[in-house]
Image 1 (cartoon, rainbow, N blue to C red):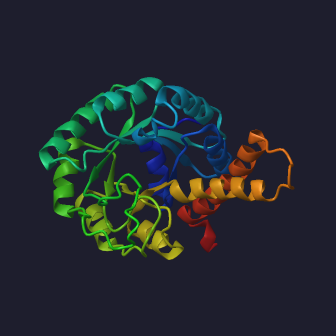
Image 2 (image 1 turned 120 degrees about the vertical axis):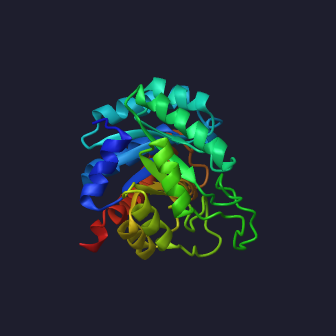
Image 3 (image 1 turned 180 degrees about the vertical axis):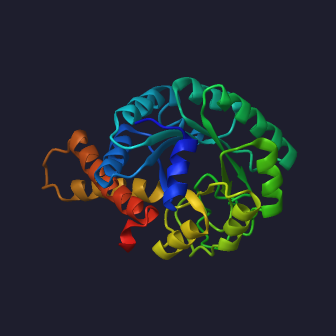
Length: 290
């Protein structure tokens, strides 16, 4: 069932859990994530980031995501992740997305503020929710590391006092905070500052906090983040990697001169992504503690 960002975050708040927000830039990942959520009977967010446009156009995969969400047996929000321009946000809203994220985190504060206000006004016309970001996860914002394994000193942690002003002035529904996570593959163990999350929640009347760069975080750190107030966890890289590993294992297991069928490869990738997504969902819903 298709729900809005605000509605699905309300479920997370009521249960004191986090909703998994999975990028699904292809049909296989989309099917895997929704099937995993249905098996576990948990709400889920499926999302598409603007940086995925070269892989498949939003105009192609977006309507499929919306229709798949409508037919799902669990609450599903269809969300635009890291929308970099207002025009792209508008495109997602017209397709039927029920949540959008405007990412102006690399812009000067005032410009981020003004564009986020415009995004909120746009979304209201479609009854969609808005996520925005304050702070920065550093030079690997796109998920591409420099390969050095060194700590990224370009990160800018979210200022809770500034967050209150930003939330009050924009009227957003969720705030992506920088508190130590990183997009992409982790080269070093993340050092998370949970006090940032707690203070943002305290200052901003318990606004749902979003964790970006969720892949690779330990179970204990996920639990601590959720208890601190994280209600949405973005997750993609390690699920995508599991699909790649599944495809590789399938190919390597073939006998010499045995034909390789693309349909068989993607079926194995889908299977592995589903299992990886299920494990993540169990952690986000705190089911792994039971």
